[in-house]
Length: 175
Length: 331
Image (cartoon, rainbow over all chains, first blue to last red; front, side, top):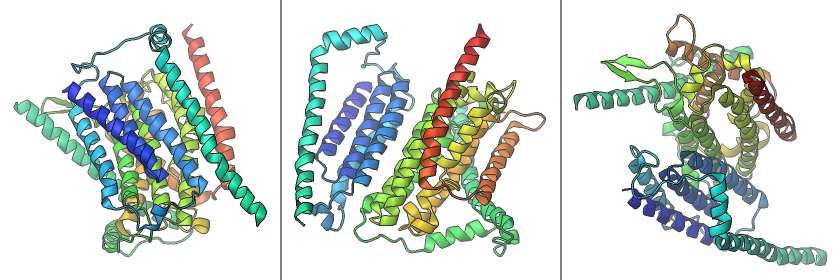
């Protein structure tokens, strides 16, 4: 039961995140990402960490994504070719509905399952010391790869953002 | 088997009663607000439908249900349709953790007067109130209208800013009660309600709660004279009604939260607990209406200034002071 839930939730997380990356409409991307955060929160609950699950919802879904949304709404993005059509059709919304239904199903299955005692997924206890050793000893390579990825993402964002601004400035100077 | 069946029936009855009471309270709060505001402005208020206008909420619901469900051109259809639901659902779900009375004895079963006593109840409340932002923001964005978008952006900024001070005002409460469970927090106030123990936290929480409920003097997201209707400008019929009802459900919930965290919840002499709880909640609702009747709206920059430069540092200082006092009193 718990193993099934684990893989189901993992699937929802991965699919929702993939959809978030590939959406052209930034607000829709935010909604998919929120969906994946909910799945992550349920995963944390399944692993016996209800507190982390609550934080996942409060901090990531409730605060950080709201800030994302705030910035997207402030940016006044130029309308994409998609926006000229009559708004999204039902098949564009099918994935998010299916993902949300899967989440609701998992939540219903979780009722009555006590956090952490679910078999199949081992429960971990770790002191900050153990955690630190595991993070920077055993998984040091993974941590470094992830941090490099973040650096690449930051550089990439600058690269993608800059020419656009320069072009606009030139146009304004010309006009 | 029979025992289990009785338990399930009791729980279902409890859920039904809670849902009915909240919806009725929300509907009649609308009427109460219109009546009280009218009296404060030397008017009569609604008094035609039924005795003293008591049937007005029913008439309003029938009116809203029969109005056209309007979809603006080029609006983001699904988000536009979903947003009012998000606003109402997050509001009503919060009530799940509110304990409104001491446990009852029914047919030899103990029936706790709370839907579920989560051990992370405070976090559940904060989480849902931070999710409530999405209804406002997405509703404003999806409408494809400048007024709605501005209202949505203001709503986002305001709710995020005041959520911080609201959460920080609850930290001393949790420190004093040593628990995240709302039932434990009520029981910890048996000696003295936390409004007497920590009045500063109460004041910060109260102001943040008024801001969270988007009511005057913090009604920037729907400031009528500049934004028409704010984030719900483009909504009509029952979808507007859902936003509206969600707002009043929110008012009931936030009043209950103030009652639970600072006024001692259901605790009180002589009268039964549920009645004490109801009296406190209604008194707070009256207070909110009173505030709306007497204060003008803040300017947007004043609102941000007040939230970030006054309330937030004050709340942090209060956490520090409470911690120091608790440490000092224990040694």
